[in-house]
Length: 263
Image 1 (cartoon, rainbow, N blue to C red):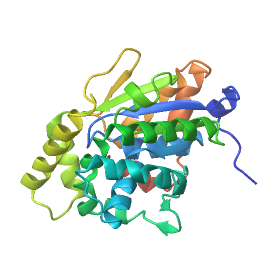
Image 2 (image 1 turned 180 degrees about the horizontal axis):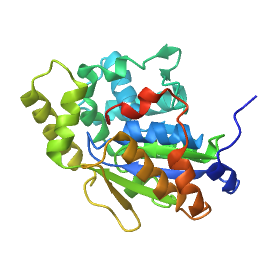
Image 3 (image 1 turned 180 degrees about the vertical axis):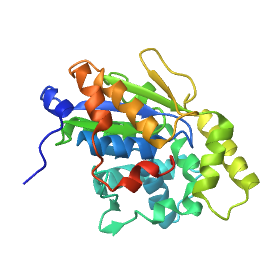
Image 4 (image 1 turned 30 degrees about the horizontal axis):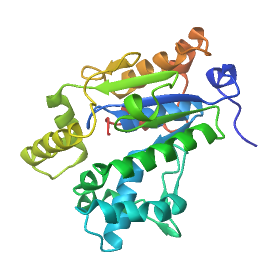
């Protein structure tokens, strides 16, 4: 038997509530979005995983990532074979019969994703995929996070949030996640990623209608509470549910709320 809908989820219209979340690395997007999806019993969509998976797909086939035409040629097959879990508790990504959940997090893939994401046709194809995924979700709502979600992919989403934090804080969070890696290397990695992403999308300034959630001085639980408050104030939901949602226990153990931000 499925779990009963949360108070907020029960108050929504039949169409799923789309929550679009943008922001730079280390702002806490992924961890906060997943935990918020758990509490709301919403679906969760990591759009960045698709770009990583497409990069893996291209490398596996020996493609030259600097040749846009070869990337474009792969798109129909990739789109047809790509699958991703929408459960915040079951994180898997598949291309055909291959589970690439771990492969796409390899540093070898991470360092090459920008080459694929800069191809306009790839961005257009994946944007269409994300939109259909959000519209067809079986959940009462879906939280989609990734670069340019608020400004390109889901510009009409009822809730659009730009999560941000001071660069020093973002670097410190990243360093905490990458134990054993030199602080200077982490700082260089974050700065380089920001610079690459800035070439194809504006993820540091909120567009009209986008709510800024600055997590610089917030811990994980405070960030989740503020995120849920923003969602609860969306059209079609009851603002009075915000306190109860923020206080609701997570589906995970108490250790969840003590976890550091990730991206």
